[in-house]
Length: 176
Image (cartoon, rainbow, N blue to C red):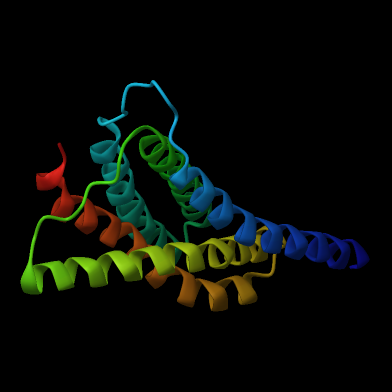
């Protein structure tokens, strides 16, 4: 029992470090442009697709666990984490080689876009510790706590994945 306590303590430290470090590193790299490099303009539809796949896999994972298929659920959730990491790497790479694309719409549609974008960004930062905590509870075998955390983590992660696609679809007509 002592080992689990020590592991849980170490995991909490790593969750805290990663939850702070990832958004800070992304924000710093987002502002850094690699000079004299070809823009990676092919990436946005790829990382939007990854967001869409994340949403589909999240739903499939919930269905799998409700049907009692714990192994499939675990594999799907691990895949979602891998998808999120791939998204993050591509997103940062794109923004390090390309200027940000301004949204060209006006009026109500711009307000809707900005609302979706703002909530997407804020929740994409908030989802980091939620995913890590939820995953760690499963890793430590605390499935009661895992289920409690998952009730909050799942809808937020699904919202972030879906709105990532929506943001891409709304801004894609303005890419140069």
